[in-house]
Amino acid sequence: MIALARRAGKLALLLAMILCTPLLPGGSALAQTGTYNPETPADPATEARLKALSLELRCLVCQNQTIADSNADLAVDLRRIVRSQILEGKSDREIKEYLVARYGDFVLYKPPVQGNTTLLWFGPFALLLGGAGVWWLLSRKRSLAHAEAALSPDDEQKAKSLLDKD
Amino acid sequence: MRALRFGIPLAVFVLLVFFLGRGLWRDPREIPSVLVDKPVPAFTLPVLGSPDKKFSPADYRGKVWLLNVWGSWCISCQVEHPTLLALAKSNVVPIVGFDWKDKPDAAIKWLAQQGGDPYVFSVTDLDGRVAIDYGVYGAPETFLIDKEGMIRYKHIGPLDDKAVAEKLLPWIRKLNP
Image (cartoon, rainbow over all chains, first blue to last red; front, side, top):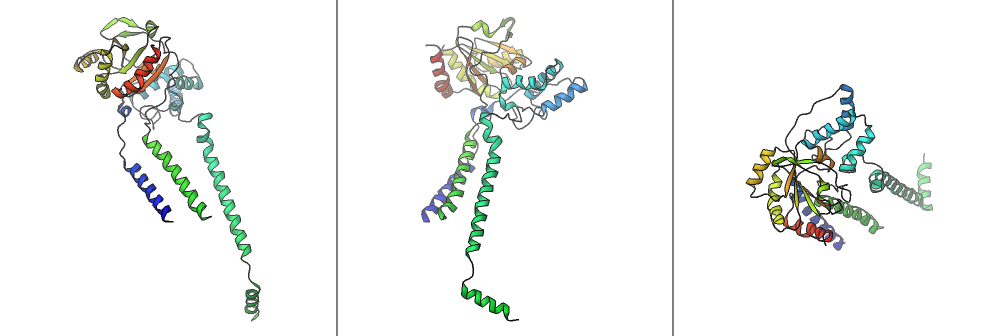
């Protein structure tokens, strides 16, 4: 028990150390992009498709924003490319493939179902199943324990006499 | 039973700490490039300082060379610059600059301010159109290209002496025996 407590203490210390370590600016965290530049909108139909597509594409500089939300220089450039490809008559799929070929799957906000994303897609279901399994096992054990806790003949007699009093 | 009761949550906790800890130490900006082991995207761009001259990666067929994305607006390129100057001086590999979304005047001035030009020459990608073909999303970025015109390695962020010694030079030795 003491050994366990000591181990838990060590783990807590490790966790605290990990959590308290400031994020050092790794070399590439310094990477950046240029200044703002304007973009010229096209016809409303194109702009609507651009908007829909942009919402599915990640801005690689800001990472947690889509290129629709971001005004980073790169996002503006990417929007411009997507717009010109829409005007060229390319399909949404072709445009996405074009960007994936250059920036990788990371550019897609909705990751494709493939080998390295199985855990991402199916992990939650596996967890749910696991949880359900544990719950089932525990509740079964509990009902078994209940069944075993039957009254002894003596107690039964006592209970009966109490109930029969009236 | 008791062991399970403590053991399972402890194991889950340790696993969680492992993944969270790993996440802390990984650089989210380092996106593995899909372009590694792919042919270098073709372009023809004017050379900085002499816009009549043009450069295409095909001109460097048969050479092992570096393409370094920079810009005068890029602060971390200043951090990287001394390393590039030293690398250029050692004559191991020609470095071609890729001046990204920059004004040529500002770029030339910047190179003078940084204490030298490590590049054989730089090409200018004024509107950033070509950079998209290279999957560039931040400067500096450095591509190592082999004799067959294949990208063999990509470094994201400023190169330092350690990255040159441990990553770039071994690769260059391998490609340039």
